[in-house]
Length: 357
Image (tube, rainbow, N blue to C red; front, side, top):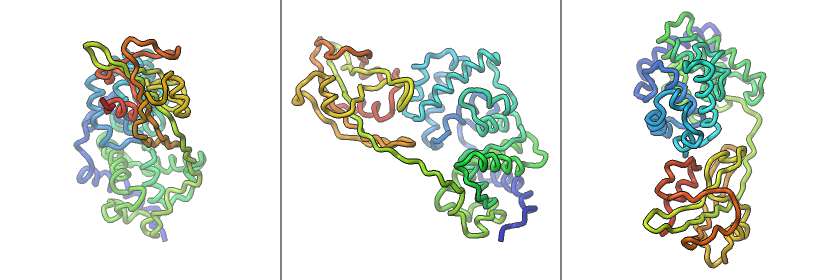
């Protein structure tokens, strides 16, 4: 039997009190009402753990301290700072958004969530987070972690892989907001939802004994936390094998160089620099124009993406100094000690930084 609905009026006050006493308070993007910094952190935290984001966040701000400096940067400069964080469409949208804020809004982020949501890469939940943290707007976030928290709290049986139940969950999230919050209440409430979803109400084995609203949770009351959230549509993962052709040449008096090409504008690693990608080893050797004995197969590496599992097979070929490029193609030689200036996929960067002598 679920707790009475009227008890849910205690949800917001309990969450706010818990966040102030036991929530996270030392993250580098906390304690600011600067929309640029809050926006940057929210975009970086999409589908990425806090521990992975912190270093990138600090380095990104050193290079681009405000929205105008980000808008003025080139795409390659932005990608170089984002390289390794993954989900690169976020970086492309980040850059486009900064440019629109400067060009359309004179460098000032809109105040209301409804206006923020019109900008590239800012969805409803991200817009709500910026508006709540920076301006105290009475609006709830509803990202994946929050949907999990609220679906358990309410024993919400709607299929959250479908649009209709997602809209219903959004409406329910708004109904649970504090009644008459001051801005700092909205900050604590919003951060509390994030803290609860990331550190207590985890996907598996939730720590219900640590939850400040466990007595209100219908799923906890029923012993059915494992049933929520309901998602019937499963993501089919594809397995692919890619051969990475690593062409290296020595340079007198300088760092060795590798051949890099820009990836297509759409697809995996879109717009990033990468070594040539081929379908199999024979194709890689054909592009290199060398005898198989001149190539060195390096250890294969697995790389997981959201919908695909890649098996990467690097093939290293040392090109004779001053020798001609064997195949006509677009790309460039880049010094190995200058890779930091290039936007590279994380596994490719790791590969090039550990090439055998």
